[in-house]
Amino acid sequence: MALDKNGIAKRIAQELKDGYYVNLGIGIPTLVANYIPEGMEVTLQSENGLLGIGPFPEKGKADPDLINAGKQTVTAMKGASFFDSATSFAMIRGGHIDLTVLGAFEVSENGDIASWKIPGKLVKGMGGAMDLVASAKNIIVATTHTNRNGESKLLKKCTLPLTGVACVKRIVTDLAVMDVTETGFKLIERAPGVSIEDIKNATEGNLIVEGKIPEMKL
Image 1 (cartoon, rainbow, N blue to C red):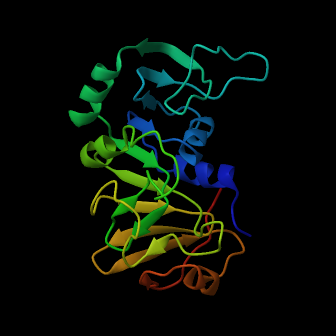
Image 2 (image 1 turned 90 degrees about the vertical axis):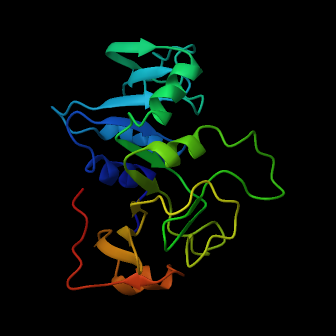
């Protein structure tokens, strides 16, 4: 069966490495904070000025002044630091973020990402996404495989305004894990119970299937 949002976040948490500095985008990516492997030292950064984000607070224990870039209440780890937005973006633009995890409306088979605007809908702005995709050492997209209309988000070419060009390295959806290659989306893993045919039918861009494709281990 397809993963829920927490399942996607749990799978992405397996991509983290000890010592990483990680920025988590709005939406599904923020959930990754709840699944950092025990014993692993990972520092989460938020572009509104917090280094050392912890898991979401327990019910009734939220501090309304402690929020991430998506205005969600968060906790702070021991040793966390607070600073202005200019310092935060200096960290990002300076290449000090090892991994950024972003949501997306569309991803093209060459790694372009459209994540900030749907024409005709009200938006507040691009936020930090453009800086993150231009500066982070590694970029993983967390998204559902299709949109609300059942249309693929993994396309030959993006139709929406781009956030970044040829920058996405890996995509984790509710159906699969895929790497962006020179020839298309290479299937790495499939969600438990999801067939390769299901993934093919949900992918507009070129899907590369080589050998036996294992199920995700969550």
